[in-house]
Length: 215
Image (tube, rainbow, N blue to C red):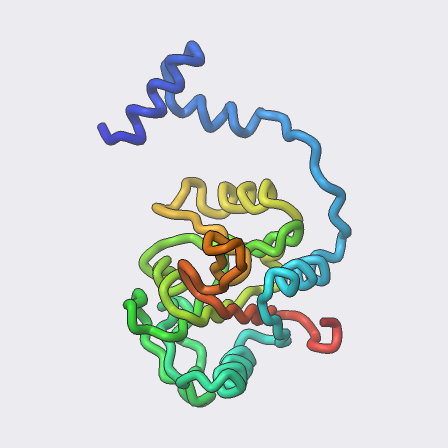
């Protein structure tokens, strides 16, 4: 028996039950607290929030248009056309766009990381990323520049909606769930905000399935 199972059994015992599976039922039955009112069109809300968090945003109609957008972004910021990429995204034609990608977990010397995201949260402009063999967490955490390819249909209103979608699509949690809200930042030193303190200091979110003029 692993640590997780022992913890769940102790929780179940404290609730007067003997089955750890009952915890999941309790979560599903638990009523939600007050929720913010989010407008129905989630994409503009999400876009506004991520821009306020110091992210750059681009829009493409189809996912195969993402590589040229990423290439232009790297060129505009005088960055090398090389990136480490989530394996699940490496089938896109990055090479024709002039970007040399490697499908693997990131190392400390990688300058650019390209990932997808499980969901975007319109309320806060937060990205929800799941770890796994095809989605290594280091690709979004180690490089100085993080490029995110996000399907507009995966933007949800609130964090609660993101958790609901995760339970619905995956059934159980992955090893890690990371929430990313803009570039890494800190104000620990003289209360001056500094980007890139603990991770990327530059983030581009490419929204797929959106007309550029609608942004």
